Image (cartoon, rainbow, N blue to C red; front, side, top):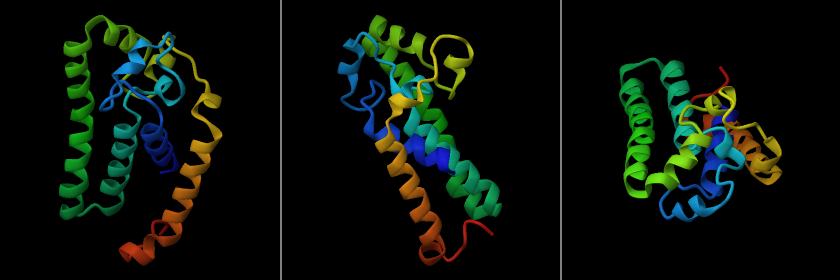
Length: 149
């Protein structure tokens, strides 16, 4: 789950051409920096991981409907955003997409990018860890279920 929080925090705080009003990043010489080296859709992948863990942990029909539909929406959303950006920004998007991947770590695995954890930023990692620890602490109080047992 910590990875989910890192993806969400970094995704919300990193300029990204796949986000609303983020297209100016496509003009940068190296648009794929930080968390975008790992995936061009960090927020949606963070939310996907969170939803998947909750489907597995809960295992009931209500959880499957809630978290499963959120998971499906996030995964379909990454493909939908890619298609819209490709149509709208053409070659600029294609250059960015060639250096990144939808699926986390795929561009790194394929040699199209490299892992630079320092670019994500210690502040982002610190915020993600703090939010994760806060959620662990307050989860039972807020939702009535311990996330650890």
